[in-house]
Length: 338
Image (tube, one colour):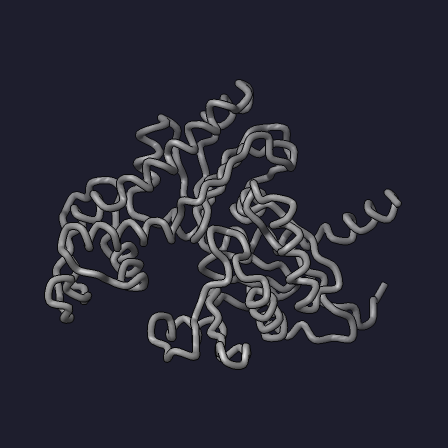
């Protein structure tokens, strides 16, 4: 039956670093940094996404470019709401009815944090808001059939959190979420260069270093990259050369924190599911999975085969998009309950 004028269904991966939107029937339609520039004098939003990211660290006193999400949760409710409203309008979700929106959240968020996400999306114009856990969305997006009674382990490394879960029969059996991910890796790079070279670099420079020469497992060939920063002694701009062997040293600690978290989840996993994981391997998703050598490090420490999912950065958004197909069933279930 043709349904006239019903609002679109949208899936949103509300990430600490990036917001990815999926519209049912169209696929991924938006991928922008979760950065908002606000005029402090008026409270108006000056720029959102790519435009706002260019302003990070480069704004005059009255304009502040910030990330309204920190470590996977909303740290600035008002700005998050404005950002969501902007993105919802940008994906063209303007019809007579407001859209239904599914948003993914880290696996161990509190009820208060869940409510903040639902309220922000509702205020931004959603007709109804659904939540899905990141590892489950990542598993669906990676093409894993999570409905079967067998264990699958997903390690989703985003910008603010790393979510680890053992999934069977469509739900998480054991899961954990740690606030060590892409942003934390950048922090460690900044700290390391400040300590070793007496030079301060910005977060964006640290991210470029991580993406270009960063590694957590020894590289066959040591590569280097020139970066600009501010000399702590003279206070003047300076260019220094950083080697991948130094990046290995800088990123060792946060990488081991992720390995330890995976280890602790495996320890709590029921034996039958642990045997399944041993056979099927561990799936890595999220942008953080692309850090050179992280899969090798995890494989060496656990003795289990580790695979990086295809289109790993979009896995969570794709999974959220696929989960939109079940919204009518979820609504029906809810109606029967009341």
